[in-house]
Amino acid sequence: MHPNMKKVLISEEQIVQRCSELGKQISDDYRNNAQPPLLVALLKGSVPFLAELIKHIELEIQFDFMAVSSYEGTESIGDIKINKDLDCSVKGVDILLVEDIVDTGKTLQTVKAMLKNKGAASVRVVTLLDKPERRTVEIEADYVGFAVPNEFVVGFGLDFNQKYRNLPYVGVLKEECYQTTA
Ligand code: XMP
Ligand code: MG
Image (cartoon, rainbow, N blue to C red; front, side):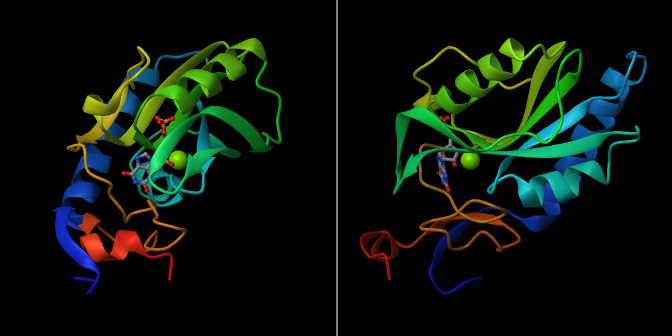
């Protein structure tokens, strides 16, 4: 375990196992769809999750990326800015948004509405983590890896000041590590 980590909440083995279950469920749900879904991953946090999840989807999917920002330090802020938009048109496309964590739900609500406005045929959401206690808007992911308690978590894509994204598990940092940006 990383020396700055207080505890591991979800191990790498649990994440891989859950991705295999989610991949199977997604494959089953879209198998008879007119077209396979376009996975739209939100940079940067969802990258490790996307990489694991797609190994378990048995469909000819494609993926693309968007970068939105709404987050400074450890508190979510409401307004969302697009830093990188999709490369392709989403008109008539069935989209599966890939998120690292749904917290207040504001990011998801905004991005979902944006994609629908651009003419997406459907928008579903798969998230590695869900923090239901923190929700301020009424929105739920269609596929959830794990529900986590109301604690700031890092690892498997999730960061604190851009660090710890490469840890292969999800956990909580020691309190002293949140006090400094060093
Ligand atoms: P909202 O509030 O819009 O926020 O649902 C979603 C985004 O907030 C970030 N977030 C976290 N990042 N550990 C993190 O590293 C956390 O515990 C956490 N909670 C929320 C994350 O970027 C997510 O996409
Ligand atoms: Mg994020």
